[in-house]
Length: 544
Ligand SMILES: [Ca+2]
Ligand SMILES: [Ca+2]
Image 1 (cartoon, rainbow, N blue to C red):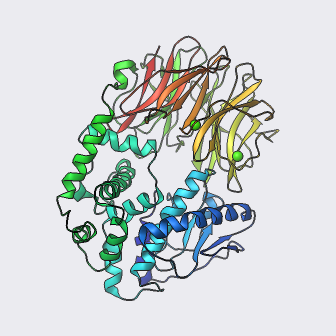
Image 2 (cartoon, rainbow, N blue to C red; image 1 turned 90 degrees about the horizontal axis):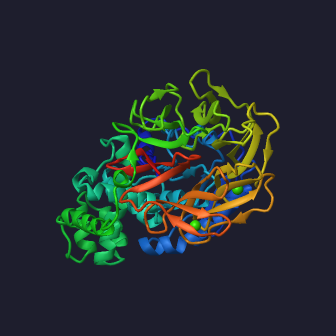
Image 3 (cartoon, rainbow, N blue to C red; image 1 turned 90 degrees about the vertical axis):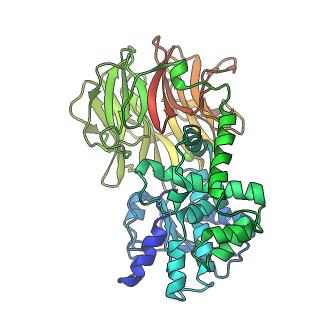
């Protein structure tokens, strides 16, 4: 979870004016035994869902930390990023963050992204901060003394963020991929550099959070489940976390855990990758150099590949590029468009590419001629859109949109006219694609915090589940004859490319990589392109 730096930002503001204004919204509240979830217009359903999740998680978290909550914890649930960004709950800088716990007011505020998994993880991550802050503060608001304040702010970030990640259980195959790649390359951020994350490059910050998770995982696995609770109780009294570790492990561990933890990760991941291949051993690399290259999409004739890259800044500000299918003749199609890494689509007539651009607190769909030129916005009233994909006749576009806290699949003409909603579920949906004959739509839906591939009729009826397992299955891409569906799955613990014979249901594994393969796209007869993570970056590869 990004943005929990705001724990500190909120605290600093105590020394300035700390006016609380929240006049934008008319807040109501759902109350349960331990929580108050504040919401505004259209947010009641999600607020109730969140309250259920929080009460379900409360005994586990309270038990792990050995902290009983005294007063009801206040959550403020925004419905959209733009509502959240104009929040007056805090005067801190919230732009670009996913949620924050304001230290002195001790309120928790965030917005949903449609995914129930994300909602639970961000809520429990922030709630962990809330609970431990409350503890450090002696259980009452506002702060007791300057010393306590300094302690709370100066706690190392591997501790505060690692604990929140560990308690929420926020470590999926993506996190595993980041840490594994760094561990097998001997490029982990060393323990000493995890005291504060501010000095890290943008691309290292998520890795730092996830390494923080593994520090607690290591401590708990080796020394017992009492470690988080005892450390949290002890760390409030001192500035030396190693002494808290000694106490929590009954003097079994000391400063040397810095090296033991690193060795533990290296051993674990070097064992995991035995027999696996590097992406360049099984396919042809098409990109190199700085930046992440993602979401490759073949032109219909297979001659070109469009993709997004942030090579110009290496900070996640993507632009659209196109190259020949052998990786030559790279051309940049947009400049500073702030393209979201949420899918692109080549129109079946070859003329256009669709993408999502972030501006004015909206995620809008844009269409650009595939040889470059003027970008045209798809004019619809929906503000938070993802995963655009053309219909077979290139006249319509399917996509997902976040509305009232939930995502669903929508369709509209490419000029934005005739919009229609195709799914109405609380579950998160993503990456819809048409079958080549236009009769079906394939997509991924989140169920029990993992994704499954579904098919439905083009009008949204008769949704049918094509995968059924406890692993993450997503990013469908369909062959031009409509018979074979390529997708990504972490069924062996690592994101790899699989395909399914739709009629027979038979599944074939196509890659078995050390890092992780994401975002696969299949051409008519020019093979498969995908984006794969290794050496700290995504590059694009092609496979026959
Ligand atoms: Ca839905
Ligand atoms: Ca699954």
